Length: 204
Length: 121
Image 1 (cartoon, rainbow over the protein chains, first blue to last red):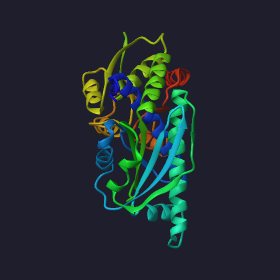
Image 2 (image 1 turned 135 degrees about the vertical axis):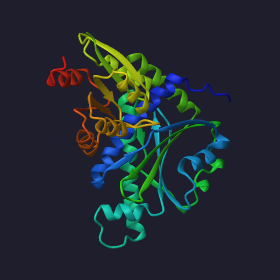
Image 3 (image 1 turned 90 degrees about the vertical axis):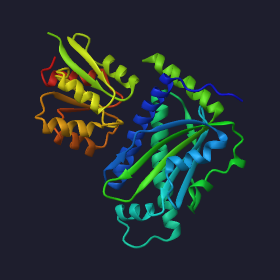
């Protein structure tokens, strides 16, 4: 199946929608952690499904071990949100949130799920508010623990031909903590998103 | 005489939204810049009595623009327009010499209110 690429205007508008959504999610994270969150310029890629794993690795960087949380979203736009944390991410988070003792595995998981849930919720809300779309999302679940980045995406599970990857990064000032938030959408969602963006552009 | 203003944002759509949010009665000459470097070029060319400045941009971000302007003896009225809405981001840009902070998405009434507050319009 062929896919019409995003026009320059659509890409620019999507970038700005993401920017605003990223800012709202960053603000939520800053409030939880009482720390200053450094934001990046969001990245947008449309890739053939065979390149998804490579692109994710390129976006996240060649970090040794990561822990990832996934959350599906559906209704007007359908896709997967992935929040990828570096191996030390949890320690920094626990520290900032004032946990005195070392966390056991269960509490560590809960902490990562909570943080991922806040980020994903805020970013999806930011997108839906700007574009006027409706989304529901599932509860977050741990997708991989201390795994290699390239093992995160299992091609056999994807029945897609193309994927849209949206990426934003959050890091904390003076800390090791870094997390990547990826939104992955398949071709139908790309078309739906394109429609929503066009409507949004016409409205302004 | 028309007031020279520069709108700095890496997104063309965002610049367009900003231009639309400006009060129609304001007599201005608009220059657009897609990153901090272009913003400083416009400023040095005397095209930025008022600057609407985004923070997150490639090449040179808004913080760097403010730092440079401060070093050079800030001779422009900078209004930061940002999607980064953390209170700390706001504190930071104000300490770097920005006069006001507008949250994205921009709102026409908010822009007019700030321009009036500072006696610009």
